[in-house]
Image (tube, protein in one colour):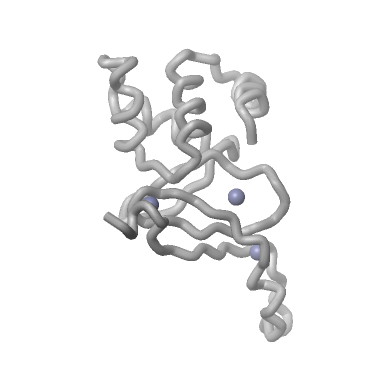
Length: 137
Ligand SMILES: [Zn+2]
Ligand SMILES: [Zn+2]
Ligand SMILES: [Zn+2]
């Protein structure tokens, strides 16, 4: 995913390219880690002091529907990041700051005993821990 694709996708679905929306996308790109709605709010509120958390939630919902962002749950709260567009891979995620590292191998390759008659369509696999920076705090 990149900003051009994201903006095109929004436009195609009839969503106006608002500056707030674009700012949110740029935050996702710049941060390159999982952020909660409140986390995004904190980063954007300096530029848009009258922005409501509701606006953030509304845009997040749109981004999710259009497959622009992906989500995971950290500390019992939903977090979001700009969706990777490269080949199939998995992530190791810092539960503290939401930083993401890529894992190239897929554990599904090792699973050979799937139940007979069951058609697998997709899977989700994430590893959690602390990044170098958060571990030393
Ligand atoms: Zn990735
Ligand atoms: Zn971290
Ligand atoms: Zn996989």
